[in-house]
Image (tube, rainbow, N blue to C red; front, side, top):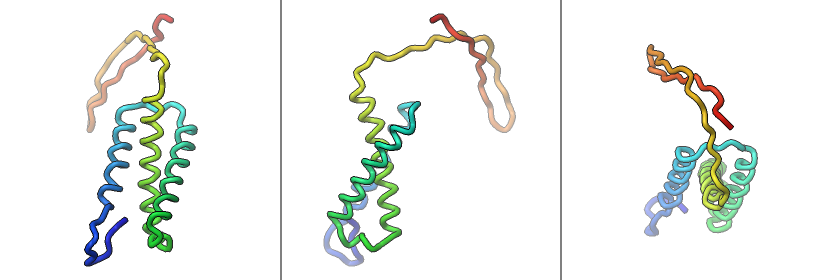
Length: 124
């Protein structure tokens, strides 16, 4: 996966590292996850399969614990992003909308500015 020093073959490490990070970033910023345990289970399964496939393809990485941990983290990131994106893409149910009434709003200023809303339950 990664080229040794002075190796004439190109490295594919960059191609392996960037897609999981972009997919993870998109999944975290675009969607709110409510049920985390099923997502974590599917993510761990996908990440484990990817890690296993990585060691099958590149047996030189098997004895290196640090590399295995780093590759495992990227595989888990890819698994999480893939699980979230696949769940959203394959979900054909109609969206649920919740209506609320804003009772009060105020701004708290200090080291950081915080915008607060007091909400009431809307009509069901």
